[in-house]
Image (cartoon, rainbow, N blue to C red):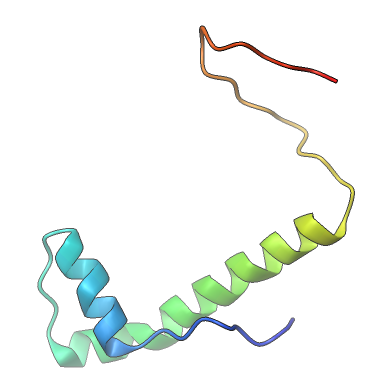
Length: 71
């Protein structure tokens, strides 16, 4: 797996939490860095796998009432 281009910092975590109405201490935000870094790296790996392959998802969800284009 490639190293993440995105950097998860204490300030980024605190800002994301605050956007959701949650105030985190510096200590708690610092403790979340390894966990959120793992999540970001995992998502980037999945995105890379999907972009590098010609695979399509086995399930496709459509919004009811929306026009579907297959082709």
